[in-house]
Length: 402
Image 1 (cartoon, rainbow, N blue to C red):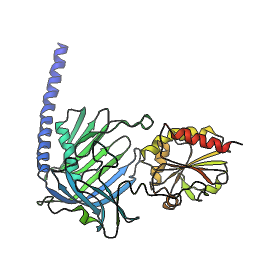
Image 2: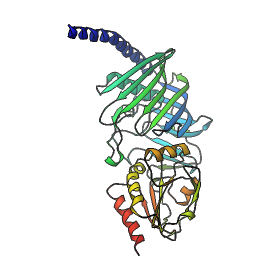
Image 3: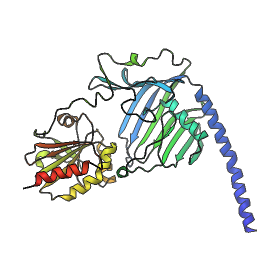
């Protein structure tokens, strides 16, 4: 009798849940059909991103976007161009189905990526807003992956939360792709969470969020205008600012930087996480390792366990390790990063002048090994578990030999 009552309760619960589930599926199909009819759109897009644990965004920007459906593009299925929302003449980024263009205004350069320098099973270009949300909704309706959906209606908004529990994180570059597993030293929890907010009267998404264990982002579409005209007439090259040098991807990163080895290390005075000033001249240790790093850089994050061990390997009189954040992250993000990664060495807020003085071009991680006279004796670029740890440790030991 008890088992029968349990079965009756389960059946009753499912009878309540099933119509709601079917209703959600039907509504999302209507939204998807609505979006499939969009040939082009223009709108403002507000973007924010966080590192996990941050309470404030580390990046905030608003762009004016024009996007076009491009059925000929079998990758992201769209073309787009982005400008600064406050200056419609300041082009920032675009994609025409063949080339992705990024603008570096400080260097007056436009870097073109034809996806041949680094070959991947996808093109690492985030689709424009409507094409991006369309691909997520299609995945929700068609996938056989291990997912859970949470659906809510509040006023004029229809909200869906998608949690994907697969062995690899899922990213959307036109369609769902399973991202390559990171190396063991940079373990990333594989759950992927996407949220979409839909305006019920127009049946159009207006906000999307992506939450990963290493990165969180939110995109809000403002004042969209759906245009009946399609891709015809769009030319990415017409968007380029005049007088900028055009380079191919790889040419920029391969640009020859002056060698720092054998030269005195440029001095600096920077702030630590408590807001206190600290200068290179205050270091009393015989040997110094400067780590120019970036919050959000995978290789930089992977090097932290090694750097923690390295800090404890030598006495303070012999060795000092100093990391300097060079990607312009705000101080609250630096504090969170230090706490979340249990960093036991000095970690400072960098500056553009320091990046220029050490000729890194903003790349990370860099390791500069300084002797007792503060001359740069070795420079190491990048980090790998197989090579970097032994090479850096050996170089330090050689400098400390009597």
